[in-house]
Amino acid sequence: EITSVDRTERRIEALLDTERPLPFAAAQRVSPNHPAHVSGAELVMVTGALGCLHAWLFHGCRWDQGWAGFGNRIHRADFKRLARLGPPVVLVSSETRTRVGPSRAVIRFDFEFRQDGELVYVGDQSAMFVRNRALDGE
Image (spheres, rainbow, N blue to C red):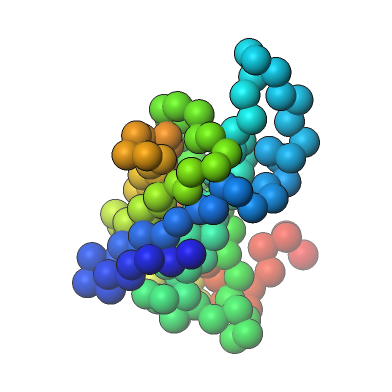
């Protein structure tokens, strides 16, 4: 759920509902030593969704106009604590660098995710968005 969009700061705030079915969390083996939680893979997947929102909202990358997005590099991914199932995770994404042209956009992001006010994830990641261009080498 998007809760705030700041076009000037190129910042998005959203909530991740951790009570909904999450694919990796649902497959966890839960024990007293391994509590149910939002998996690290799910948190990284959320960064991809936020990156796509940035490309769509701030840079005009429209999938129906031939644009596609790809995670490019995870410069930093710090999992500070477990994100528990139940309370929502507050997601904040901000752009730190951009190079945008008519058929390519490269965006670097800072991510901060919090649950109950506590930091659960910090990321510094890049993504590339291209228009009408195959990247599979063919």
